[in-house]
Amino acid sequence: MANWVNARLLADGPRDAVLAFAAATHDETKRIFTADMLAGEATPSRRDRVRRVGDGIYRKGFTFQVRNDTGERHFTRVSKRYRRLSFVLVYGDPNSDTYGAARIARGELQDYVLSPRQARAVWRKHKVTLEDEDEWRFWEASWELMDLAEAHWTSRLASK
Image (cartoon, rainbow, N blue to C red; front, side, top):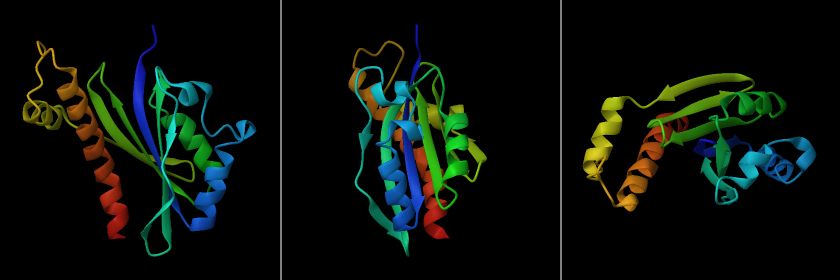
């Protein structure tokens, strides 16, 4: 049985480089996303609009799922082809309670994983328990954990 990991990829860089990357994501031969990432477990991938996030820096976001992986190795390889971009790959594995984010640029990866203490605090905030019948609270907490992991890298990028 497959384990599906929720993921979000942010591509940051000069506008022309972000737009070229966005165009490449539509070309199957470029292999930006693998087949499982495009299909997902129940929903296909989603794309955000390109937006300006800093002085001359633009961002395009993609939301998808990865089967049995976080996608870090794959996007580390992809980053070698898009040297003018930096990527933040955010992942959340609700089956193992692992939430984190990686900053990837030019084939180099820096990883950040939320601590169990951070995760427990978010679960408590949303009143999520093992006996909980309300899945909505679980997913709200899961999304918040992914947002926290993303902020570890994006707040640093914004301050540069």
